[in-house]
Length: 323
Image (cartoon, rainbow, N blue to C red; front, side, top):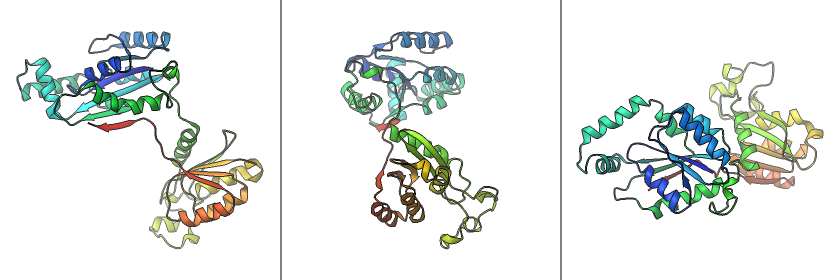
């Protein structure tokens, strides 16, 4: 595992690295405070050659340099940001002989942002984000508790200090993978009401995908193709011209391709009409993430039709914590 620790000036990156070294036995890769392309290439090569080790480094990375590291399946980016008062105190203690000088601190911070304008984007891409509000000095054991959950999540539940746990690539489980595909399909929706995506899989292979919107050759809903959706009307569902994501996926697959033991992933719980069609086409299980106002009626139909139903929630990094 290779971890990069970034920080807003004075937030506590050094203590975070020390926690990984002391509690989790990470090896620190020495770097300058600013990391150039040569440094980044060295880190990538070193980490790849030593992928069985837990490695950590800190410093200022540009966006392009960060993207070089993000290609590695064993890379994780943590960022820590403290409240302004905390950052000011840390900076004054370490760089200004303990004397408070707010103006000097602000000039220093603004100078870094002027020199590295893409830093906010770098912080925003972090897998793990830790926010520090308390003004008293942080301790290793406090940070260790905050790091335990995201590290175990990255190692798929294993103890990060156990042998070979850190060599596990950071990849999603099947439910997360297919639900992300459903969410991606939803981005193609042309419906004015809501975006919904659906994926049908069998034996961990995608059979069909679908998203909601008007039928092919008709004007898109967002172009005025469905009078009901564009009017904001919530009743008169029978007048809606938009096909639901589940309908489109089921129509694409057909009963023969659905076959036995197929699972339907949808980012929104199926409505009553779609539930009837799901039962009829032989879907074995429905996995959904968001609830819908017709849930109770849909559940009844799916259960009577022998379809398993369960709700899924994303429980992986990024991890946000507040100290």
